[in-house]
Image (tube, rainbow, N blue to C red; front, side):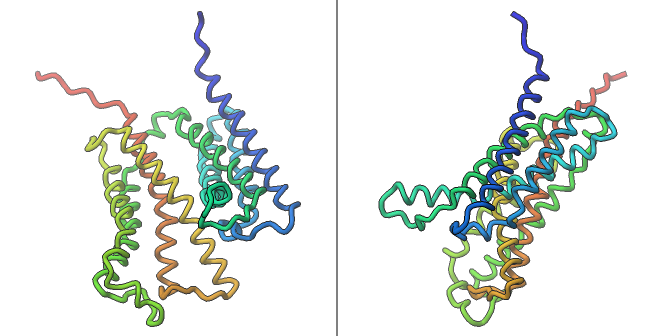
Length: 298
């Protein structure tokens, strides 16, 4: 029995991703036609985000079928740009699912109103992001594309530090980045410092992605790097957008934290997702480089 050519799988995934891009666009169009939807999803991102993500990703897929080498960089840029936007477009899906669960499980803490067209768009975007990520990671690489820098991990390390640094300062009783009014409950508490632990782990992960030698199993580091990137990419851009929207509307930022502090924290989350994706991809590509043979003694 003859084996199927391996090239069919990427083509099938590319076709699936293109269909999902069409589904995201159709769901976005349905959102525009349905009125009186719940407004909780408005803070997740701009209204045009799903359409932009679908357009970028679909363009990258069409160019993928064009094998001209001079389009390689453009294809890669559009692929990763479309993937990041698609992850952002899926960012509100956990809130949608929690609201659905609150309808099913008695005594749910979430409101029962559900943005069904938005849920369809975000679910389609999530599925598209999974397929697009698989396509981007299995793209054939030439020798020059494998020569990638390793400093992205250092950038991710620096970007992971602002939030735990502020949390540590506040836990010790400091007031850096806080307003005088409403900040009483944010300082001097070890329990409020605990949310900084994931970011300390993210900082350690960023450094582990720098060297080529393996401190931990390569697959474990890759799984941790890509998983952390996806989680933060679903939170950071949405938080930045919510803050920017509030500032444009002139809404007050509450909670006892200064507006500049919000900008630093949310901005670092947004940039960390980009740096962590680059660091993980760099680590993955450097691991595919052939090891130099050891010269035999003369």
